[in-house]
Length: 184
Image 1 (cartoon, rainbow, N blue to C red):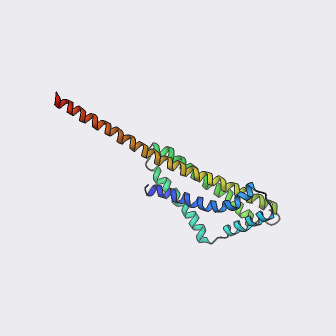
Image 2: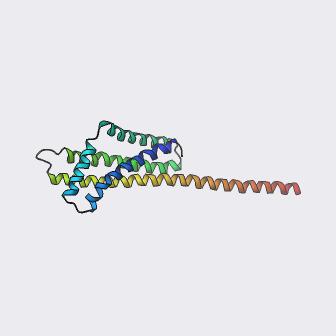
Image 3: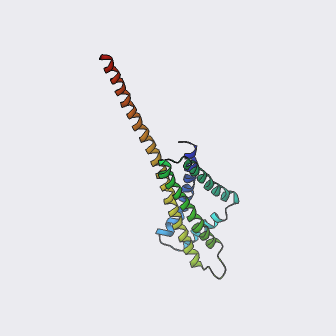
């Protein structure tokens, strides 16, 4: 694994870690019974998340940039592997970023800073459930990236093994042919 691969896997793994922490609240909002305790836990968690210090937000957005740089640097070498594995991974990464920008940020704003006389508590609860669904979608996109990057590494290793076996067969044929010529 090289630097370019690490520049992709590190941010993806980091974001999966953050989202799995959020999943402690999300799974109860999506698949459990939504009662006042679950709603209160969700409000407290996402309010803390939204009001995090600027350094935390800078770290999150910086990791997004590291991932994009990693993908673009891997795509710079345009071969079949880059087209299929890295191109598909980049598409999933951009999709996750778009979900973050369109769903996560807007839902967090509705939860934490509702518009007076417009957003009701019901709207906040719906926004929290939409945010939870968006987090699950982002998790799926990031897991897809890990699968695609693992598939790319497997393809590289399989191809290298096949080339080594072919070269060994060719070397043996060459040795056999040279020995046959000496005998004649």
